[in-house]
Length: 388
Image (cartoon, rainbow, N blue to C red; front, side, top):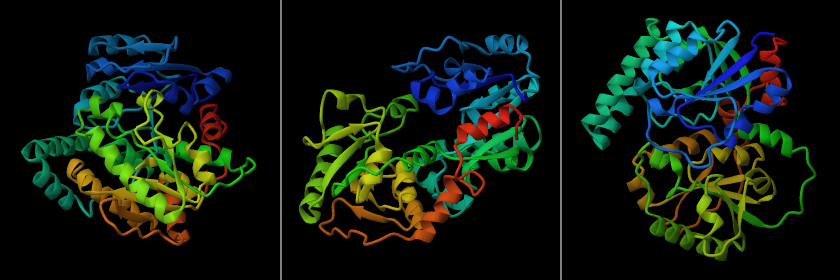
């Protein structure tokens, strides 16, 4: 066996989603120990509701506690897998990992097409829209990357990568990691769900469109990472006005695929009574005739099922999220999907898809030729058990 224990490291408390998506049960059933090293207290003061109770969660309240924990481990038998995007704020944490010569890994999945044409474009955009404070952060992040180049911070030993560009997802210096790490090809979480669902018998098709909700007004990350977001009443009012126009002109009803963290939808329906369904974006997309969303990572599903995809925008969203328009255009350029402004009276529904671009998107951001027919869980377990 290559490793006897997997230690997942996160700067947020353990959730049920993480527990399921990163194979805790499967690892335990294969006699591999699993711990969750919760270093939230080193970076944030925000408590996460609905923390998943797991007996082998270790909460770290100081760097002294972290040092003590690592000294007490048999690190020749452990693989530390980071859920933390590498950037300047976490250099001290990763420096400690370097000092203790840990075997480290990371999942490079959930990447999006690059919204900037070049590094210069990125700097100009951020300085123009966010000022000198953002410039300071960008310079610090460049310094964090240099720490990897010169070995002050060790690069990852293993990268579990979904798509040829999957490494973009795990932070600064990923290009340096890529030069030194062993690459294990896996899939995104949603792609694995697609593999499972596509084998099931197709349900009766209703001519509906599904909206992949992102819970913009209330998403916990906006509080956790202090991100500016939209005002709820205005956002839902404008979205519902578009849905009404869409339904009248297409004769397709809109079903809401709720974001999994959308707790408020359990007690209120901000979509004017439209049907809200939790935890089934995969199934809903599979049987839909068309998919609506913003810039959700769940675009995986319409691309995998080869469904027509429309990204929704308007002036309010573009004013609130300053890089929002750039992100939509990046997805459009990579996949050939359509963008519709909810403010416009025009409603240009695409008549088809660009299959070549959909396939290219899949291999860049979702899967690989080596993993496209195999579940990531099996690939990961075989690697840990030294079977591949």
